[in-house]
Image 1 (cartoon, rainbow, N blue to C red):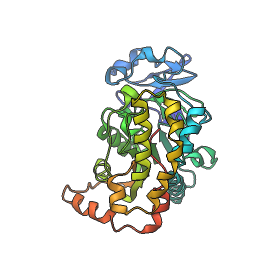
Image 2 (image 1 turned 90 degrees about the vertical axis):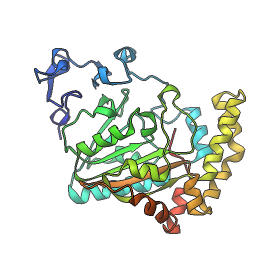
Image 3 (image 1 turned 90 degrees about the horizontal axis):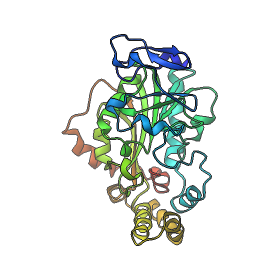
Image 4 (image 1 turned 180 degrees about the horizontal axis):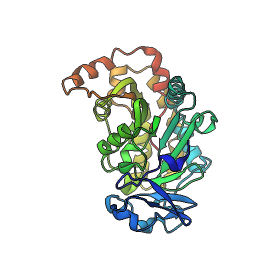
Length: 328
């Protein structure tokens, strides 16, 4: 798959083409056709700034990141956080499943990662495989991304991808419903989506942190998808660790110090393994959903039964669900 063949103008979804060292919209009727898209780190910035929270000025530093980033996952802050919170076995299991299911449909599936500037916990398989066509976008350029894009207007042709991965992103977008509608649009019929999103987590992206979801709220967000799997990602124990860390920050501890001082409480997350599923989900640190693109949305009345079904899910999923959190 050639990236230029599936990339589109974020405003009109018209084709784009090279214009010197940059790209430009080919639709003469589109307002963005009169200028080329800017580029950072050699990557096109396919953003309609008139409809985005981001501004062109944010990309003048050569990357566009509005906050400090650890693309490698090797910083002291990241390592301390992983010691306290743990890894993400839910995402690792779902990542393997997503690739496996996508390859049943197409030998070399096209998979989009939204928020792929850094490799998410449990998502490394996506970046390591050479038998998939992986496309990564984020709101800043990194060594992993191909395009800079705002997920409210995904710059891709309708029905392009076999699967989409969006991990710890939906809390950072202004309108999650619009983003999910865009995911639905760019997926092929029956295409898969995996999302994990915080519930009981404090603000962790400053001004770019907007929303949290219960398990039921997350399901309703993806109501135009047929559920494959869903559940909590980290339960009450993990959420408590987050609260202790942010209490220390509120009392004046710097971020790294607060994380280090939370280390003695790391074992609280193991309580999630033995917690009652219904109560653990109600206090979950994060939630996940995997589903297939559908043309039929679930009904509002279906949500009551969905909540009750969560308590009856098998215990075998608990070990994975009880070890980590969804956010950064």
